[in-house]
Image 1 (tube, rainbow, N blue to C red):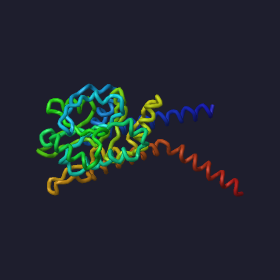
Image 2 (image 1 turned 45 degrees about the vertical axis):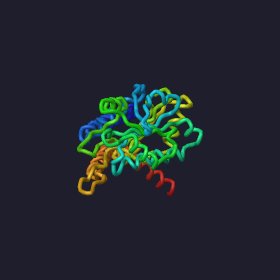
Image 3 (image 1 turned 120 degrees about the vertical axis):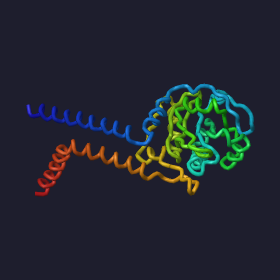
Length: 280
């Protein structure tokens, strides 16, 4: 009877903990900037086939997105006048190509698309691209038109918004497409782990489900935590946003600790009791 009672009690505690965590997730989703809903839209496209779109590359030649089939495609969105995150994103992609297994890199194509069709001509994209690569065969820098860009971004689950002339608010994200143009994973932030990206490609090559998630609070914060400072003309860390996320994580930990306090107390009592008995 006693054993049955404690099993039921433990089950109730676990269910209560799950409810608390669910409430925390809802709280987080409704209180942090536009991030969670935007990330939900971003993650919702995983598994879909990317539609075919016509792009114009850094040489001024049209390229169909589906003409890149057959290789794994790493897609990033930037604009050349971006004073901060975009440079970090593009440099990180360059580092990926240098650090990945050469056999994996050979099967991978880079595609960087501007979100500023007004300013970023093909010539300007080429000049920008040359700062990071001298091989446009394996890494294309492209633009679209004003009608295509929002549809392409929506199909890839990418958020951006022009706030004023020359300044865009946007996600910091890299997207992996498979050789069949199926969206496999997103990598958030501005610094992409070669092991994680290469691992996702290997998973796909070996027939395993590609799994990727925001690794920790910092990754989550870096999706949106940079904000534009019009005085200095640069991006800076939004520490208020970062604080909110850390604070909410602490709430979740405190909630879990509260509902498991009796179990934790019993565990420590058992540990110390065992040590006392062994030492006597």
